[in-house]
Length: 525
Figure 1 (cartoon, rainbow, N blue to C red):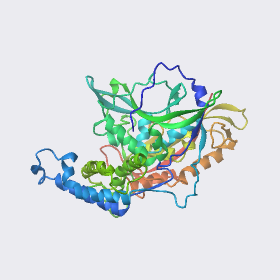
Figure 2 (cartoon, one colour; figure 1 turned 180 degrees about the horizontal axis):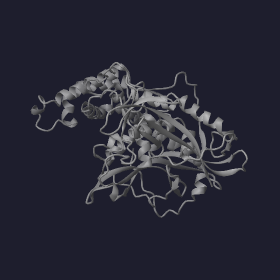
Figure 3 (tube, rainbow, N blue to C red; figure 1 turned 180 degrees about the vertical axis):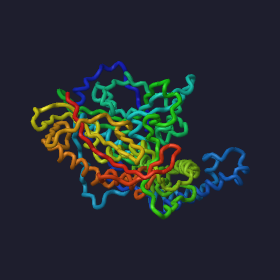
Figure 4 (cartoon, rainbow, N blue to C red; figure 1 turned 90 degrees about the horizontal axis):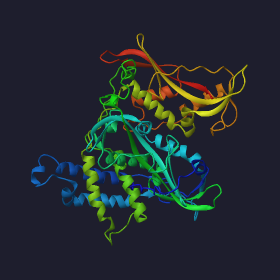
């Protein structure tokens, strides 16, 4: 991702309402991963595994004394040319973007016209559904930040996913999560990605401190892999704008990733994302254990084929975008620059720790967060209803009322002695929800899902169908069919109760049950 260019602060402030009503003309990218099959065939995986094994061997204790300097990728490259060239040959022959089968001849890419105000929540949904970590970062997490001359500070860090645009003399910026316009540089003061380090126990990638720039690169890679619909817009992208009162104009847009930090002395020494003594959701939960041992699926050290593809495919897309395809010969030596890059990737993969056995248990707060991410990922409409939509309701024997209607997911976990209830959207005990009367009719023009009036019972049934009817992707790092994934699938299927075992802190495992409930909350205007 290229560094965003600062906009000229002398530009006059834009009119957010007018910009929202702008129509964007989007032309699909011809070389974008969208609409193409991205893969590494077994031959390419084998070549990579051979290179990774050779790197691991040369970094071993027996080989290291033979080097005058630490065995960095640059030092190792001359000794790995045969293995790296095998990878290069496999890369050119197998690691390709395969066009859709039987494309229509001379068919131009389909142009899409979309109002900017409708596109903003769509972009946000793609980002949120890419991974649970991205979802939590956009909401904000407690973290420690190190900045030069300031040292370590505790506070709240939020990933600001921004959409920046330029059409004519108009420069604008929208924070997609808060839907807040912010003329850049304006209010947003991002952290310096080159000098800042970040650490947080709230998400797995940040358990150890890491340079902010490296973490941003990981997030960009995650978006490339999980949501190719966003990938092309991480670079400045030319589009056409039709703004009310103006002719069609050519301009550009770009998605930007930056972090906001708000120092909070009370968060200086946090340890867990929801460490509240009155709400001990750090208790572990697992499905009822079978009478036989769960098979150990741990593997030998090193990455799997999926891990290799995750590192290689973003490189492939960037290379093809730059060179209009993979070169089939080396007349100009264009691909020689890939050799040291391959060695660097192999060095990083060689240091990948062994994969652990599938998790048999999960903390209750992590389960709530995973359930929220799965629900948000079921569709843009689900995200809108969880956030709340403007609507009118008519309850029996009452007049029409206007306000906000929100879908509330409540995770209940109980044993004969203990009981927890969690609003999965907040991770905290739920606020009291006054149930709507049976037979209530709801109408929401803002939601594209149910523009017509619908009975409360029908709405609830459709919400459950939207969750249980989706083929859920595995959580990153986990496989479908594992115990925790199976537990979440059962909860999202809307079963009455699920038999589980629960282990509160410093106690023993106890039999209990869990259930996910959906409630419709109405907040009058």
